[in-house]
Image (tube, rainbow, N blue to C red; front, top):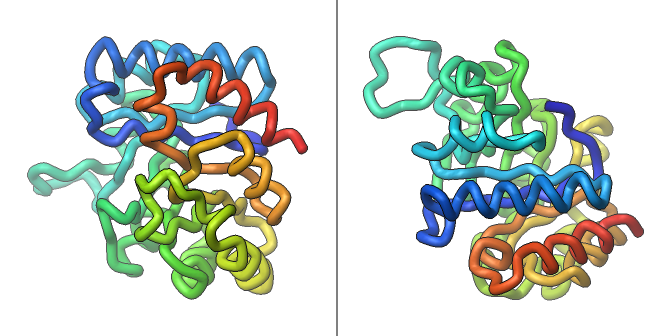
Length: 226
């Protein structure tokens, strides 16, 4: 599944609002909005619903995590080949709720690339974003963990973190795509993130828990086209 920019990534985590039929409903809304606006929207369902969603929508579906192993005796792990067989487009890596050591991130990025899948590495500050960019993932997202789930976007509360990240990463890697995460809740947050030099956003609860997720996402996509 082709991933283009601007990109809006929706992490469903394991919220009750995004399990089973509710997960499929949110993914279908994302698909509709993406097709209507022309903005790429990717969804990250829970692992149980992952393959079902990947086979049900015509937008990129990403795993929430991938382990840095080859297929083998790794009970409870998820390897890149699992994701490829499930028709998934790629995976998040190193989310603040699923941390990896830098060596593991490097190995996971390489494993995903080997099987032709997309990698999106999360970073919690400027230095970790720079380090992640050196691993040549397809994209990275700057997400100060103290703002995740607060409803206060880093693009609004700490715009200097975003601009410093963009500047630092671009000195090392001019190809990696940079997204803005942590607290992204409104269309204006998305617009600010784009104006600060990023190419999209990563968000979760604002969409999953919204009373009107379609209207919210539609406005976010429209505001990403600044």
